[in-house]
Image 1: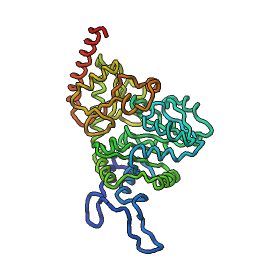
Image 2 (image 1 turned 90 degrees about the vertical axis):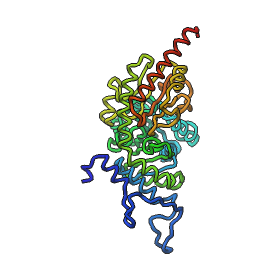
Image 3 (image 1 turned 45 degrees about the vertical axis):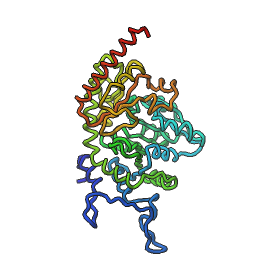
Image 4 (image 1 turned 135 degrees about the vertical axis):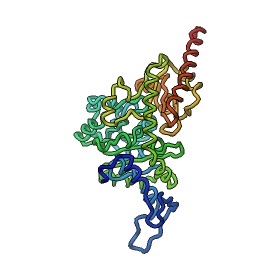
Length: 395
């Protein structure tokens, strides 16, 4: 029966565990750092919560099942998960990474791992020939974000995984934007899936967390060693909150994605908007691939206004979205990537990655789509007025 279940049913089954002793329908919060052992020679499953805790383990088992992997891991943040994954590499190893990678990943690669002799090459992972040319004899990982942040470029996970296997490399996929509801990279050939669980999996802007799921026992064993050795584990209370967030993930992200589609279509018709980046739009260069490997454009889109002044005017006049870093919450979140998620990049690197001065990223929440569109209509009108005033003043 398990194999025939719809994903929404499986999600609930994996996150609701009835306690056999009490009948409680929620996983208990085991606020214990240490566990009593019965004798000198026979230790129980748990001894110290850095190495394993029943509440965290319930979360790790749930995400492993939902992603179709062999073992899950919960970390103190998305960057803790990503950094630990990259520490599977050794000095002299090389990684192929998207040129428009998230700013935190860019920072760990260029300012930390580089000091330890772990090399990288930035490429356009949507260009398979460019990926192949970047591979060296010491390449160990091809790292993928799809859709990418913030320009929503779509990378072919199946094709990248085949290239990686042909060169005896791992494929790591950041699946934060899609979640296992829409996209399951391990089923497409990837070796490791990563999440900033702060985003959609939590869904309520109240937890900072990271998740990883390994597709093989060998990789799982190596990752567990690092998780335990480094100790960047997720706390018990936050593990419980993530389990709670997972229970409503399916309905939350599907509603947000439906609204994002409607808003993207609206923005694409507006003369104040130069470009809309959303893989659910038919004119997006990756729309067919996105539909094939994810089945949805997701709940995040970006759009480009004329310049920074227009972006400032828009943000100043909207009333519904929160203007903040992060994404994936019940509230819509509007952000400015040049000064937020990708502030680590130089201006030249930003422009080369397609992150212009007028680019805004929108994570669509659970507000009514028509209310958001009315709000954006008024804000775009202010952009238009601001543009006329600027032209009229001769600036």
